[in-house]
Amino acid sequence: MMISAHGNREKRTIRTFDRRPVFLAGVVTVLVCLCTYYFLSPSDLIPIFPRLQPKFSPCHCDQPYPAYDLQFDPPNSTFYDDPSFGYTINTKMENWDQKRQTWLNLHPTFKSKSQENLFIVTGSRPTPCKSPTGDHYLLRTYRNKVDYCRIHGYDIFYNNVLLDPFMPSWWSKIPVVRAAMVAHPEAEWIWWLDEDTVITDIEYKIPFHRYKDYNFVVHGWPKEVYKKKRWLGLNAGSFLIRNCQWSFDMLDMWADMGPQSPNVEKWAKIILEEFKNPVCDQTALAYLIWKTQNESFGRKILIETGYYLEGYWVGIVESLKNITERYLEIEKRAVMLRRWHDEKVSEVYGVLREPFLKDAGNEAGSWRRPFVTHFAGFQPCSGNHNPLFTIEGCNNRMNEALNFADNQVLRNYGVFRHDLDNSAVVTPLPFDYPA
Image (tube, rainbow, N blue to C red; front, side):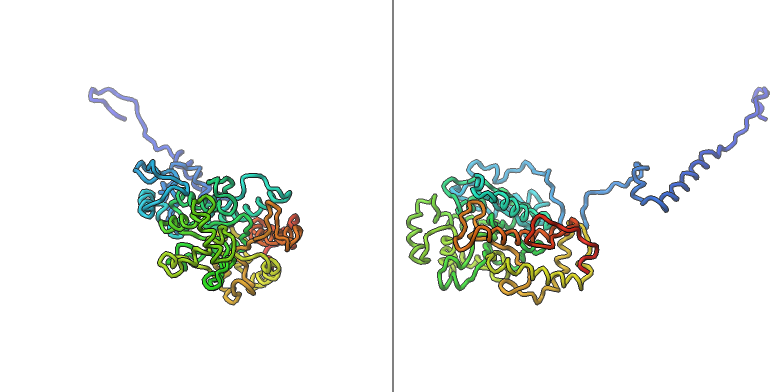
């Protein structure tokens, strides 16, 4: 009972605590706990309470390199803003190392990964293939390279136009590689691959740590080039070139021997005299390497003999079935190599496999997967194959190599080919295969 100051009696007021909201909150809490325990993971509950979501920063701290920032290009002036700058082979490049470094400094997320960043370039003619199966094989060999890039996180450019109309056929790779160096300053290395190459070891990573003192790497046999002066002592169908000023100078020297150069006749005579073969891109490259071998310039070139950066298909394809069996034997002993996994982490399994391959050898006589198999002389697009081989034989061997490589990828999708000779039939991959 409350009495006012004026003595008036007021109505009695009773203040009670309403327990219904507390009870309701308790019920909700119990239900959430039960659902979490029996049915849901904590992440499933985040949408239920959106205001309780933590604010995460885009750190990527658990990744070896920060993700590229593809939406950041500051307005600061770079070589791209220079009107005298050009992509073509007849535009002289100067001070590229400084220009590239300036660009990388302005794009720090690219700079951090640049030392081992690889950009793959390949391509084919601008017109349809004359061979009825040519376009089919071009598609498969390209998809093979795309598979490799996807698994290892590389970018690829497929070119089918002549960037320089006066550098056709084999010479067309030079202006494409040069343009790629300019278009991708974030790439430390450019890897050129001919259209008729197949990457037959999808797990293998190029050992860039071996090339810290080199700017150009090509597969071959040093004695054949340096001593015997044979143009077949190397193969220009697969090479690595560092994205630096040295490489622009090297490409200029190489291109100066080509059909668009006013010096082509002079070089044709010199090269024919030394290497006893008409000038082509490969003969010119062999001559350039031979001529500069004792100069500081030439010491930046490596003829790789340690693995098949490019391996001639004759002699390789016939060994693929035996290699398959040897790798299956390894997997029977190694449980982790049989494990199903996300394709994105395939590199881990390549590292896990490596100790089992220490006695496998490399190149001829090895039972290690050949890294790159080159079908030189096949000419799948034009159909003008080497007369030493039949078109049926060439097709069969290329199918085997492509299926061999494809099996390494298809296993990530739950299927594989038992028969390398049959491209059409795949088999579901049994769990824990090949235990």
